[in-house]
Image (cartoon, rainbow, N blue to C red):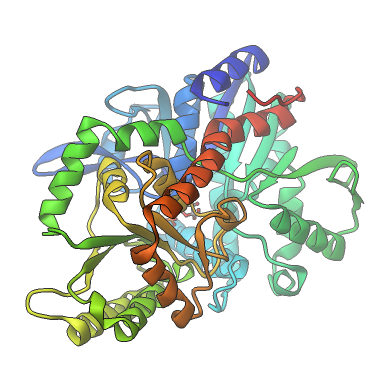
Length: 494
Ligand code: F6P
């Protein structure tokens, strides 16, 4: 089985004098002021969950990302760098600072009002402004410039993450960078040609992709969609044997690599003494007593199906009122992209739903839903998974969804049941979860009932099977697969 050491050995043996540069919009750690003291805290989201352990294993890399606060600025050196994580510094985070106008046009505008709704089937209409596109180009150039400065004359493997930075490889090539191998991993779904064709910059985006040596998608279906879009929009040659695209005499390999988590580290932390202490504290804070616990952990995004999950709980309590006072549903909702009207509207909708459902079903001091929006340390989230009877993942569309894999990794006790949306990439791998269509509140309610009524034996059997999958397909194997494609060595199961 692949682990941190296997990946380290591969990096040592195969990467030779290539340095590793990862770039993403979201930084892995941010600096904030807490009780008058500057602290460095881990950022939420699947991208950080996946890439942070890889960077820790690589030990020699630099992660370039956008810093956001004045404390982020104060904590970097003259090269805009800080070593992280603070308790065990193992790689450099180089921050890029964007102006308000840049963040508006690039992050809120083109990325999250354009590309994000375009890529997810969640019925939110995308908006594409040419001014936002120009800012997107400008910020992508800024990232490319920082990468060029970082590499200097060295050889480098440049690994770009996600939809924020598609154009970076094109700018690196235009600047004449020669000693580089480039790859982009697209963390979210890729739309079919019917949907993609509405994007006014579709040609530029596809050309941006085809400046990379390797393009990675989460699942085969997204990669098929991508090839269908290339076929429809560009004069290129698709080699179906090699699954590559030849465009203007250069070849780009297209692959799917389902992303994952650090199974072993999560499993160990969740079952450690520290994890137990955290779990007991959380139980006290929730006044759980002998009640059952259902949990949800999501960024507050319309693709995550949070209102659908709340409606399913409402439905469940209406259909099975005997469960009143018998459980709590704890939802951690990390606030995100709030400047965008659709996200504000979603937050209001969630507030109203929580209020209405709690009012409707409350009895005495009991109310079914506890909705927490404040920051929760990563170790606390793992402890939360460990004490939950059920974890509810209800995405309307999701590239992968690492909450589901984290939940499974945290359950070495083989207890706990996962309800998982059919519309996540993860559902292709975790077939022993209770798979749900979040648009069907009645079926969702019946699966919640199953969480409470399933035999211990059945739960353990399902969890064991899911753990085998996540343990095997872990994040080190994922990184090893990407590297083997790029550095052209034969991938071997460890
Ligand atoms: O996984 C998709 C993604 O957009 C990542 O790129 C990002 O880190 C995460 O979701 C959180 O999104 P944001 O950084 O916009 O809050």
